[in-house]
Image (tube, rainbow, N blue to C red):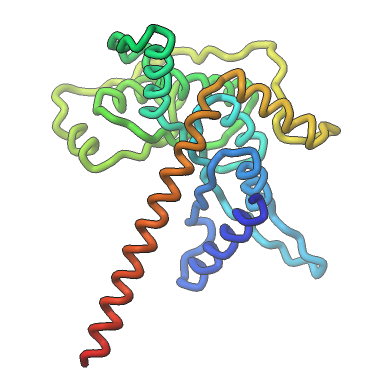
Length: 258
């Protein structure tokens, strides 16, 4: 699977370059499974050919981020952008609450306790503690208030950038009042030793992967939400292929009638 993602990434970038778009303007989206993260690491690494030619790296966006373990592994792999999914994180915690409380609906939480927003702050805290500059691009918002809350503390306590659907952008424009950022110190991890999820400096690949999987199991959420997200991506990919096939067939039929 790692080789497949790497090959597809290089093919996509070559297509963009043939069309005149430099690779620096392209982000290859790869799911943050362990093999996906390793594939992204390879794409992000420059290649020195025997004749001295340097092949520039291909920048990647690790998606389906649901916990700090995935985020740290991506940063250690040198991935350019990660996308934590705000809404889906909240969904998982709400389902977990219902499971633990005999189907009872979780009471409405204040935005300051929103699990998805807290995840973004935890990721920022970890990155600040360990010195990573991977861009945090929060995604999957459901409401305008979530957008305002996650940006409350600026880049020091929240994401670097966001992806928003048009209706939320419109909602932000229409939202009454001013939005002010608040300077709040990030809770750093202090003297906690950084877990090594990507092999480096004598760490073996097997031990790094074993630690990643063990810590992922402790968090729990990614084991449920990543397969769900991959299944949705597969459906979306098929729908897109069907759309293109339909358009191509329509053009061919139109051309045949001329």
